[in-house]
Image 1 (cartoon, rainbow, N blue to C red):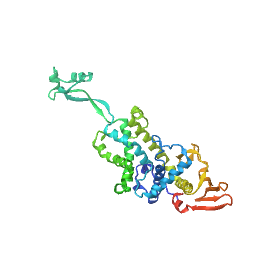
Image 2 (cartoon, rainbow, N blue to C red):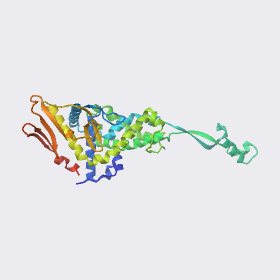
Image 3 (spheres, one colour):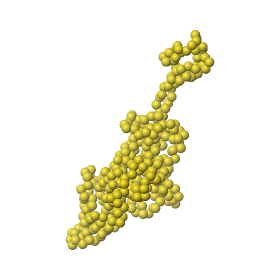
Image 4 (tube, rainbow, N blue to C red):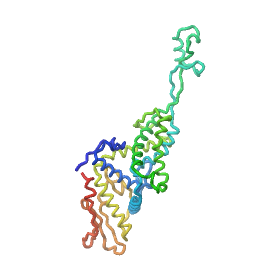
Length: 358
């Protein structure tokens, strides 16, 4: 049964209360798959772009195997989806900016007491000429105020608007992830170290924003960079994070529509990783990178997947002349002995994938 795709805005801002039960279940499945991939590639992601570094295929499978063991070992772990990954990258920048926001100079025409007037402008002289009286004291009486230019420093800048827009998206998601995890009460919370602490720090910044220099700055997404967003160390991190947020936003619908195939691909890799780790087998290795684009997952070069990710030949070290093939047929993943066409392993994922395939 097809589960209709909800509004992207609801998913971006974690408004799960607006989702039906089926939609919520599907979105949670998307988050958990994203969590698995991000934990697997945590040390191999290019933080400024969100792309993954090159490595050997067997190294990727070993990382995936170790991640599965870690997930099975901890039931309280905070889900590391794409939003959490981006939040971890941008926390240092947002914290710095909230404490030290950029400003720009505003010069407004205001009436100030003559004792506080610092400069006389042509506008001041024109204003004075229109006032009744023959002398300056007569013209400014009885308030003794003069119209002049007053300099103010405003935090309502393009870069601060972008920062607050990013913070608004991340805050909604991170707060939900924290509330739905048990990290704060887990006896092993210290093992998570700074990773979880910095996310708590991100959520707690909301009070400082509401009562600080940025309280009146609107959160507005910017269409282009200015010098600050391009060159400043911290604001550049904000811009890079927003580029990644936009990429996540663009792929949400395709991930939703291809969720079953995405789970099938990851299940295939997990089974392959288990066989390589637990049994004395090898494969022809190659170098590539994990790709996650337009709803498709594959390991290799930048070109679209050819299907080889779901068809791998394995060799037993003790009997290299008797190859086996790990392949899939529909929702079934099988390990087949090539020499006698015997099925050694058969894993039917129909029940698991039923709710994810339209």
